Image (cartoon, one colour):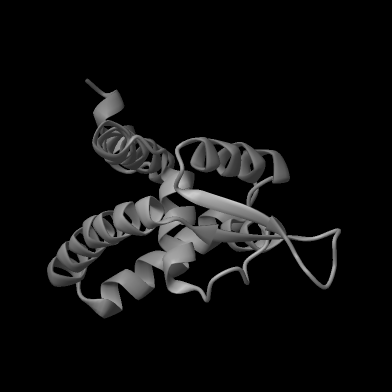
Length: 146
């Protein structure tokens, strides 16, 4: 079809195809660990932080998402007994997050999964290509043409 030429040279179509691939990544996380992508990132991120130093707002800022998204993720992780939410001792208005033993165990597995995928990309593309790709993505996403 004549449309193939357009699609083969369309950054937008390439991004949509990438999104479909990432959806299979998401399905794997859900079917294997019972977590969505954001929940997986939260558990993994908390694993590397000092206990009870991260607030929900830290996650909103780091993940560049909404308070509602983070709140839903935290509620789910708490229900799954992977996360604790405590009121900060020196400021009762603030909450701090921590992983339970179950959360730590899952985090180790998810981190290994993320690491395998990242290493595979790094081997295939190399650091320079990845850096260039990330720069191009920033240009595309900062254009706000959508």
